[in-house]
Length: 116
Image (cartoon, rainbow, N blue to C red; front, side, top):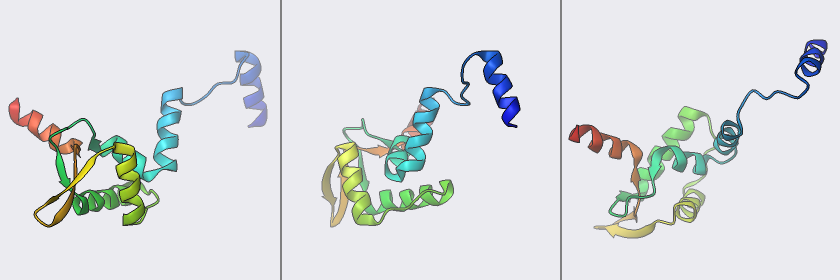
């Protein structure tokens, strides 16, 4: 194995990498920070009119972590990180705490599909 790698290095004249820089960054973010990975893949931070209940966001975050075998943060840490990364606002829907200015990407896709 070592000799094959050395021969490939000598033949190519440089090291080869299995991933592009962007793929490497995405993998690093996904495996190093479950909150950031969840936001990157599941949350639309550009929806000024969006509102989602905090407990629904955390419920989906837990499911996302389980499905992707990521480290799960507790609800307090998750909430602080989510707020800090997204820059969203907060409010109450009735008596239930919610985030504003964000929505689930899957909800956005559903709306687009309905319009087509």
